[in-house]
Length: 160
Image: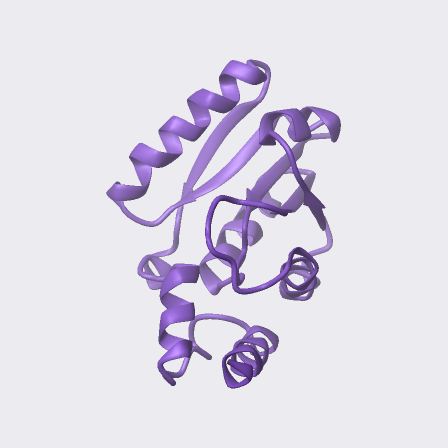
């Protein structure tokens, strides 16, 4: 059984994230979508909200589970028996950061490999930050993220 870990903050989950999860699910027996609880960034949604949005977004994929986690990603991968960390690349600019993460993870868990999947061209411009900025400024994001996330964004920004 091959288990892959797909970690991110998912603040919020986008169609780009879902694309990577769906494709990883075709390559591995099990994919664990892991919502990182406390990344070093300003978050719009709580860990529980991000978990729930991610869970709903990938519910249609049988071999994917969604969890929350904290601590070092490499240690978490080992704790669930994952031998692969899946990451998505949208552009060349992502490569440098992802390479640094992969090397850092490898220093903690040399038996865990990192693979990067290229995002579908349709989603290459989508990031959670862009989705949040568009939503904050009243733009439509229904082509960038699932309906339940669109609703959560509208509710969050109307409350502010």
